[in-house]
Length: 70
Image (spheres, rainbow, N blue to C red):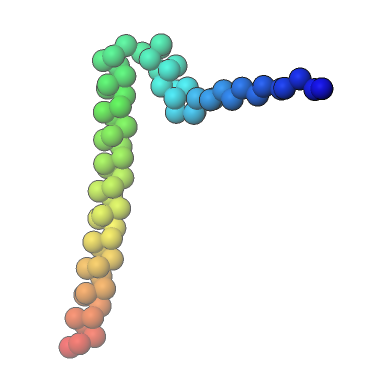
């Protein structure tokens, strides 16, 4: 009779979890908060830039229709 083989699953942390753990060790709370706030600002700036480009395309399309209608 063969002995039962036990397989134990170990959850590996995601890359994000690993980076946050390293960040927690290297940075104090205030520095970590400042870095996160800076990244949030970068993402917000990117979103606003995308919105500006989309608005510009809409305005150009409307201006093109208006000039062809006259």
